[in-house]
Length: 362
Ligand code: ADP
Ligand code: MG
Image (cartoon, rainbow, N blue to C red; front, side, top):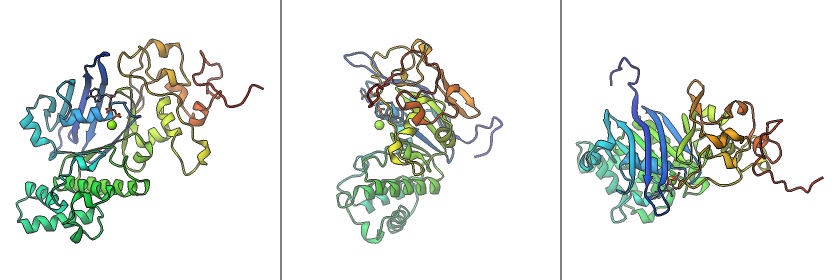
């Protein structure tokens, strides 16, 4: 593609002002409340947040896979078109081919009655004018690329004959065969053993690099993103609360929630008894109270947090955070912020939430 004068030439996918609401008997479920992101050619964007934060609904909206009851607003620009404006037929030519989706359970994507070789060869044949024998050869090659041992024999296996990790690698091989522009992987390793997780993440990286596709890597576990993402978007209660380069999020987070996610992550450079999980749980996205949705769990909470929900604001070039107190986050460590009674503010406003100690009063 030739460069354009506005410098936006390498954008493959642009999501702006995306909201998704589901009707329910208890009121509207505001699953996604305004997501914006730009995905550049060849980059990996990690989307992280606790369960229920709207990560999957955001991606299903991009794929046009939400149930009809969902009310969707905003824009999803891909290849110059707004995907939300396309007919089902037009979407079908984008979905799976130009934008591939990898789900937590590989069996959602594999057909149990065909051999894996057949399924990969079909994807190859859909994109290249090759003979069946050549397609099969390419299928073996793809299986080898995603590091399936003995691909010549494995090719005749059926999905149920493979382990979960191998099945997920077959799904990745199919995605590669489709030569997509974008790969969206939603919790691709969550169902797998820790030892297998690394292999599947490596296979994803190989696929992404070999196809030159941009990737959205969705996970509830920041550890999965380390070493794989270029940029990270942190979601909370249906909204991005921080976005920046992976180094910004890991070393200089400016939203207490991001720091909390980091604090609950085992680190090689710290003993594991220093893990500091975030107290409490995310709010319901039905009838949400006003103010910052994270305020009931936040050690930095003050009255302004109850009054208004903070907008994403630039804190450094390319790094945005939604927090009224992001200035106070500079040089703060997770265990300082979230450990009871050690809130960074020398003169705390209001009661620190979750200030429960296991020690008795002295
Ligand atoms: P996650 O970040 O764990 O992927 P989801 O995007 O799946 O979260 O869900 C976001 C919110 O939307 C949750 O509160 C979930 O219950 C709700 N939700 C998801 N799908 C539906 C649906 N089809 N109907 C109603 N509510 C839904
Ligand atoms: Mg999900």
